[in-house]
Image (cartoon, rainbow, N blue to C red; front, side, top):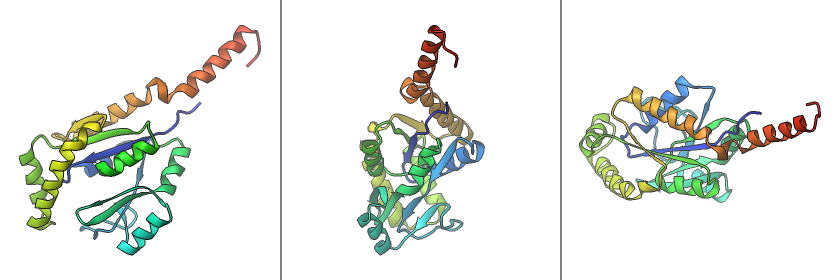
Length: 213
């Protein structure tokens, strides 16, 4: 009997490297993970493609998705909407894939409320200085936007204790393997494998009764 897939939320400060970690997981272990592509109203960054990094929406189109209940969660972050389309996630869970959602704290709490077994991972650089250096080093955002993201990080630091694991992204390769190990270990927890042990129990009862299986 195949184990059931479950939801993994990967959050972190802007510039923490969570997107890179997620891409590495999908590249190294494509049979185990599926990425939930979020919708957003922000503009694409250089190299980003529609349907790969995000579904890029106008504000009007995004608000229509909210009205039509097409999102599992959504939040407004630094003047833009971000949200998780419902249909793809439910399809992948039904196919027993582990679905990774790269979303913010507000959305993560909405997901945990709907799916209590969701695994919540929060990513941070080793220090605030490294975080600031990474944001500046992107070269894609104005000083005002960088300041907004740092201010937002202060708020996120106050709320991240609700997550199950804190991931320190210092060495990327080690960090990716640590995340993969955590997820695999979670899959071995009894609560995720109750259907499997129930099937074994029923077969054992049949053996004891002398029945053929």
